[in-house]
Image (cartoon, rainbow, N blue to C red; front, side, top):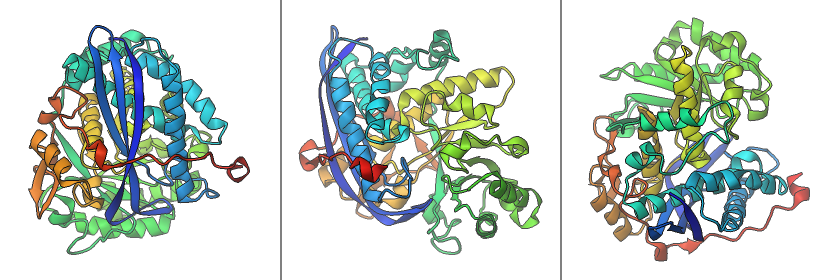
Length: 464
């Protein structure tokens, strides 16, 4: 199906967190959520409106110390605005993926001129692409899973020369929706560990069987903290698995090696080490590309923040990494390509995988579209921390939250005067995501939010 974009609008809404979320070197207590509204014309089908949403998260897309948290949010706003101009400049009819492929290079180059790094540059296209796909699916009456299995977006291998077009279409055609996706409960650096409200508290972790434990880059501190968490998790009445996420905090291979050695040899760490699935993005993204894991690859590692281009996974694989994260804020098409790679490499005898990580997807559009993406590509468990750090739908207007509850009664529930995610024995259900459109039968109340702040470019002398 070919389409042309007729309009792109941006909105935002402040979201206050229920508790501080500390990862890496940043603590988030509140952040805006960006919303994208796109109107497209589809050949032979008329016009349709699509939507997407994502937090404007500070100090994750760009962690450079000379930039303030507010300036990194400004980068994301600029990424959206730059992408809007580039996408609207393409007036000819094109497939959804063809439009993305035509714009992503110009987006990266335009953002580089403002010293916006590739990961932040990809944010704007990622959000527009989700909204475009939502509109395309609505125009054709298709749901996300059937539409992608039929490759309605026209995804091909033009941006990933290590694959062939048939690799992509055959992978998509083979996909069936996962009916349940387990949540992976995040234990942030400031989160309570022991006792009531701690890591093993069922009311706190919603019955999770998977846990994502944040690291701060100090091997001794991290090991001591993991020992404490391990004692708590060992008391769970069911089996569990864990992942570790350093958010680029380990300075080099030597520091990382110290932690891995402790995991291998310290008996007090066995409740963690024996349940460990993988370690996520241990070192800064620039150091990652220069540092083969060598003997450390006896443990499984994945990249996340270093996933800033279509060649990131092949590069990481050559360095000893076995996996890569899927996050819709980094680009749904890149997730599909990387999942295709993981399947192809694994079929050839090499264990490679793609994981589901969540940069605090808020209830509503963001969590539904990211959940559907994971359920399509085979992510059986995914980090889900928006329900943990934000109180349900937060300050979303009641009528809007009610609309999502009515449209997706298997995904939300009423609890304590709030509408929040419904977690069933540690799992999220995906049945209602099969509605026409990109995993949503409801759209936000556009009249109940403000237009996106119009950011000026960060002065180049400050950026430099």
